[in-house]
Amino acid sequence: MASTLSRHPLLAGVAGTVVAVLMASLSIVTLYQGRQGALEHARETSANLVAIISTDIARNIEIYDLSLKAMVEGAQNPALTGLSPTLRRQILFDRATSAAYISGAYVLDARGNITAAGEDSPLPPDSFADRDYFHAQQRSPSTGLFVSPPFASRVRGGALTIGMSRRVNAPDGSFAGIALLAMNTAYFRSLLDTLDVGSKGSIFIVHQDGAMIARKPFREDVVGHSFAGSPTFPRMAHAVSGSYAAVSPVDGVRRLYTFARVPGTPFIAGVAPAEDDVLAPWRERSLIVGALTLLSGLSFIAVSWLLALSLRERARAQEELVRLAGTDALTGLPNRRAFDERMDDEWRRARRAGTPLSVLFIDVDYFKAYNDTYGHALGDDALSTVAHSIATAVRRPGDVPVRYGGEEFVVLLPDTPLEGALHIAEAIRQRVEACEIAHRVSVHGTVTVSIGCATASPPGLGGAYALLGAADQQLYKAKAAGRDCVRPLAHAAAPAASS
Image (cartoon, rainbow, N blue to C red; front, side):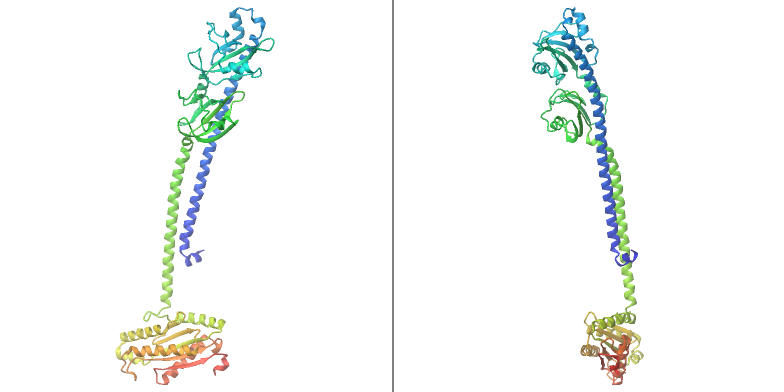
């Protein structure tokens, strides 16, 4: 990994960014799971509250129904007819009058008139045959216990009341009236007041036909009204239990509704904590975790890219050191070290490809005398000019001009036959001559170069440095021939052919 990063330093920044993104993604997934957990916990808590409400209502309705059954038995007993009104009332309504939240107990005849009441007071003269609790028993002998939607009581000044009735039969089985218990809806309100579902939450008990029986928080404009037309009510009306999230049609607050039917009754109990209340602790934690994740992620990314940039600068510095180590400071050409590495590579490549490899060995004529005459500063300038002439004459990217040492230069020409090498050598000689650098000690009057040229197709000449040695030998021949000239040697096949 360290080696890879040293070669590709930007990978550190990319890797750091990827790691930070993965960490942030993991945090987001964890936070999302925490959100789902908070919602699920709220549903479980709501379901428990619904179960408590349902159990309490079912138990009380069962108790009230026992009182109704006793009232029906008494009303159907002929033996009670001859008793005094006081004794008959005590027998008929003994259990009913002791039940909590029962605001009235009555026996009605077949025309809906009250024939007996649990209270010792004048009986209302009105008929109650128009009430649904009367119609339900009148229509069918199998109705059993009927629990009505809430209605405004005509007996108790419009107080919101729920009627529970059972059928009273004549001896021949015909309809003879009903036994009625008037239940005060304050019971439901007192039950809900003991429960808490947050500042914006809601608890409610609704009749299966959509009438609101009780609600917390209490709103007078809501209790007693029908919500059958609400877009969310059908979900409760057509299921035994369930949960869903929706915006309340009452106050526009988004809540998590959990509901269940109260067994043996037409009531639906529901608990609906506000989503904001449920998620408030989660949002607070998420804000802290999200801020820390963002800060740590950005810091990690920043550190990663700082490291990447640092590694890149270090790599550049190393490349520069390598370049400088392989570059001649005076001429800017590659030095002998760089040439040795390149020479071996090109020899192996030429051997694999079966292509010719040429080398030019160049020496500045009478350069020691030039230094003695003009000084080393001008000698360095002359070498720089010669190097520039060599570099401009060698145009192919694969060709390598090198300062070999002192006033000596070498040009490595891959995939170049003897004719091409001679052409380049002559171009170099002419460019140096055209510079017309004065050299009064030289027989030519200007700075000139002598060039030895050797070409071989590996493994000819026995190796790369044998080829270089052959070019050096040709250089000596060029000097012996009067300098300012090129002398070639071609060797294309096996070592035996070079003799």
